[in-house]
Image 1: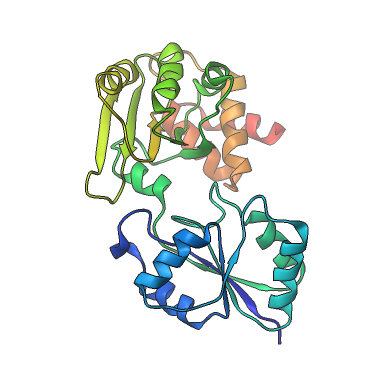
Image 2: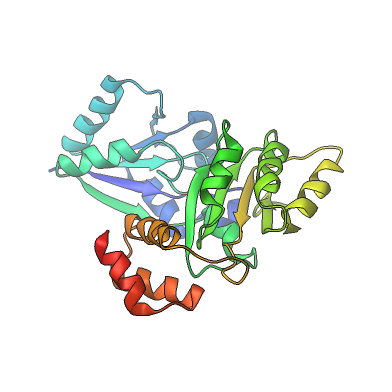
Length: 273
């Protein structure tokens, strides 16, 4: 009998966020695939769970990838864990899931904590339509901000404490008055939300002696009342929503509500895509 691949969400900082289902799954699988065996090993130790740990990350060899699939196909159940949060969200594992599906292996997601959504829901910025952009670009940051500055979606990025000032500086160069939120140390003792215009948040960060903790950057969508929206911008927004799996009907409705636009016109633009 073919085994199953469980995608197990782990806490993003607070151990209390591990779910009962995640604990039960980790107890019952045969092997645990870990982005970093030291991190996942500590989690298992705290849960008093003893399971074979296999290192699996973005630099793992093709042989390791194949061996894991063969073990699951031979009947072993495996749990895939990232260091924190949900596997496959800006973490390795996506290719393993894709290949497992092609091999006829059942994929079972075990939901739990996620930094992107945790930061977004507490930001106070619109959650009606948002786009997760992954890690903030290390190069050509201002070009990226110009590209997304007219987006009607709330934008969510991950960033490290070492580069957060550079990231917010790039945002401020293009969108100095845009509302943003920096969510820091989520679920931990020193959890913090830094809110304000980009230039105000940048000033806040620059005045700190040190900045610690992983960051989530939430950028408010473009305000339709402050600029005329072109058909090209509407099309770009529809493309983003459609590429995220949203239906044309739903995407058109969202754009019309945000802009107060004529439904027929937006729908016609959507059909061209």
